[in-house]
Length: 506
Image (cartoon, rainbow, N blue to C red; front, side, top):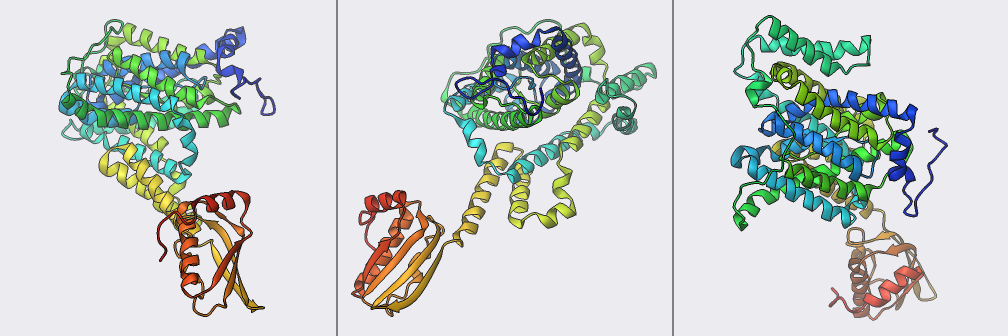
């Protein structure tokens, strides 16, 4: 599709390709080949990461692999962004890791199902529309903190291990860095895993392997009913993690959907994507998976490297993943952990927004934006909760924005003419900018009549109306008559409805 060509739209403004026509387009012969090859490439790249994310979460590899399978297959039908890949992710793994460590797998599954229910509710309530209120600096902080957490999660696998692990990790990183110079047909992380596995097996090098972390799947996932007490105490334990999973999953998924929209020059249904992620997590939990969300890295492999554009590629990725782990399970168990550590270090490096910390960028960037980014990173790293960092970043950005625009409101007094002094108020008036409005008038020195021209301003809230009432009340104590003129229609209606009903003046 050329940048100038846009698909036909539904009555909701979402392209038809988002719905049934995405499937119809996928089964054209030329498109079919592209979608299937891209899906296979994504599946190959998913295996090591799904296992690694399982280890981050502290669960058996099968839990992450099943989650990646069920998430990909479910979202292929339920999601609002064709060609986007959803599976087990580091973001979700980091959120649920403490719950799995302290209370076990069954509580984790309850949190995944409850988190999915919360996502469905938030999606139906239109939470996707709130993405417009997340500043870019918070998004950058989110990405950078995620990269740092992924790196920190590798430290246990580099502590108290045989010395040979370190050169293996270095060799894996070298392969990942150099292989793309030869070809990009096969993902470099997969090549590194294969080579390191061959070396450790043929040379009989004794190092920790994936098999040491837990058993791999030997059959299809079955229905999983968590064995936990149905009580308020259970809810108190799992709810904070379920809420964190829901918020982090939605945030990362909607951010990824927006990125794919920009790359493909198409639009997607963000509301459908939000509740679709929730439904996919519910399904994943019911089959014993650890939950997940959209994957930025795998989605980029699918959309940019593979050229996929339809839902078939997402479905193919999930199906191919299951086939690979069932047929090659014994081989996967022999993968050295050093290889996966190398992959995750690479993922951390590739995820981090290095441009955001360049000296040239920091010099150009307003200090307030840098502060928001650093605050987001600091809170996430301190709490290991991505949702806390995003909330902290948004709150700080809001405060700094309010402080900045507070100085945009100006009061200019003119000379006294015919016993009347005229003031002009300019700027947006709300709780921050109108807070010091009261102090900008000469109550004792003004004549018996004052006209306040509001044609260059707008009244946004009750705080401003209260401030104007206070000004009028103060002038009244000096025997001065005040007239407000020039209010636009909205401000005039709001001021007329609220004035005199907000309590006593100063």
